[in-house]
Image 1 (cartoon, rainbow, N blue to C red):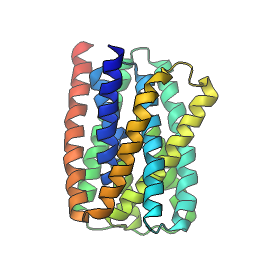
Image 2 (spheres, rainbow, N blue to C red):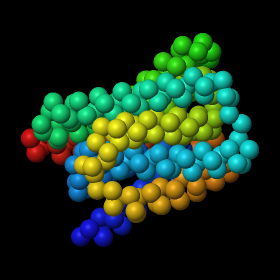
Image 3 (tube, rainbow, N blue to C red):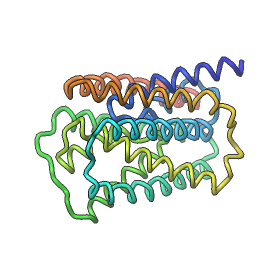
Image 4 (cartoon, helix red, strand yellow):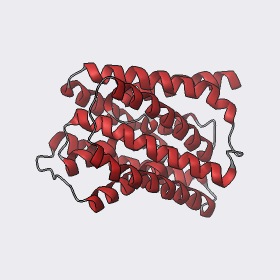
Amino acid sequence: MVSIIYILYAVVVFGATALGSVAGLGGGVIIKPLLDALGFHDIGTISFISTSAVFFMAVISTVKQLKSGYKIHIKTLLFLVPGSVAGGVYGGSLLRSVTALISDMRVVRAVQAIMLMLLLAFSVIVINKCQKTYRLKHPLWILITGLGLGLLSSFLGIGGGPFNLAFLMLLFSMDLKQCTVYSIVIILFSQFSNLFSLYMVNSFEPYDLKLLISVLPAAGLGGYLGAVVNKRISEKNVKYVFNVLVAAIFFICIYNASAVFISI
């Protein structure tokens, strides 16, 4: 049974990180709902697995993008990244506080699923329909944006890809392919901060670290292949992948939330 779980998790993580890297979603937004639906582990372990996989994917994907010659606006990242790091720490702390207060983890999963559905709907509208965008330049607003994105992504345990893209496009007037690269970099730092804060709290003792033996290689390979594909396809195709993935994730979230309410 254990080996089957390892294989299932590796397949989910590889597919999620490959597709997530192509569309700038990161992969956690796919991994977390799917692992919730499988139901093999508690919410804390699933969030840890998702965060670890997404972080490793983001490292590989970012290195690949930079080696391929992609230019990143350093000034913007100088304020987005510290914000996302701080947000990652606060988001992880908030999730631990909520799970400590609410004894029934099914309720926490339902809240996360509903929040994710609302954010997905917002992201689809912005990516596909938004005509008016802004071009934030003041360091404080850029810092606040990073803080909010990092907090949401860590609290939901997903990396934050869909709403990263939406907010980057809306607030910084980036095209979708630009957004995918910046989104992955934000995910890298926010998930690192979340993992670091987890380590400081409990040294990863509550989690089955053996799962990472199958999860991390799958995440690294997925991130690498996704970065290669992202570089080669058009923005129209990136948007198509984004829309298909978000639609699939939305229905998985509906299933997860419904299953919780039925079981309560």
